[in-house]
Length: 367
Image 1 (cartoon, rainbow, N blue to C red):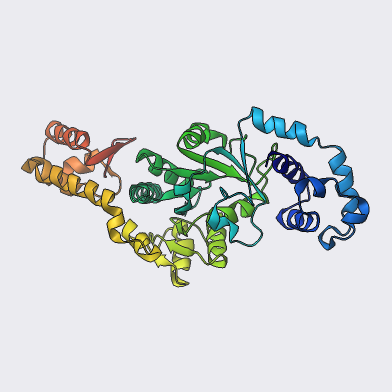
Image 2: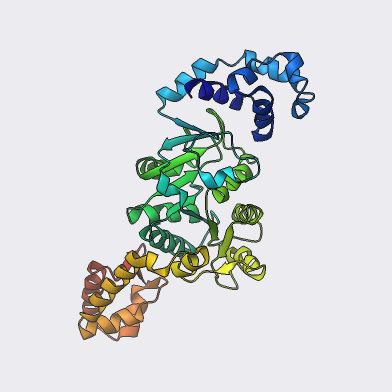
């Protein structure tokens, strides 16, 4: 297996050898080593390499297979080849699956039951909260959450899963030793410890625009279904959803404000037949899981209800005034009819009980 990985990684470093050409080489020569060392006459027999034979020979002269393999070992980057029993089974079913997955962290058997959550980098507070909540409820039901580690909805989905002590997997549009975007360095470290960071791209691959559609097909390919939380009319999230449809996977969409440009993509998916999502039960039901699989989420809801029932009348009245979207403290005080000091004390009590959350700028929201 080590020899196979050494030469498979070397082929993956050849600039123009994608999944289709590597598959053709392996089909003709049987093993990565034989394919790597193939003669010019042997390469001439492969139609997928027509016009690229000399280029392949030229590039492989500049690549040291063993040296490149040692770099991976030094960086503690794992490799999962397509022929390995560890390779994600759902990903094997897509058209032209990656011949090799690079992995930081660990892909474990339970990750085979996964759902993708994707959306826009530029998103609303509502979108981030929905992504966070759905991710948390999905991992509570025993599923893994997959996304692309982009800013916005992707980040909220990963964080929502990790906050509930669940598993989350990020798929990158660059090599796994790079952090893109750089602002998510801390998130990437957490994913490596509590999930995995995957890529089909060899070391030193930069996050170029053309890499992200390839990344998106892996996100949908790893999962049973893709949830789009927020997306404008043109969005990478919609590309992921379309890949999911091509791969015969489920597509879900979260409705939003009809006036918001960030909801247009989701509403278009709903018109085209995507399953509307209001709660995690919509997802579990469509995927064929018994709703009892969301028992952990149900227990959390029941515990919260007990806390609400135990509130004093003053706190209950104030809680009813606070919606599931940000509301400024001045408006809360005005609507409550209370003195600012008394309202502030009740708000603090509700926050300590986990029923509301304070946001920057003295805004509050129901949890």
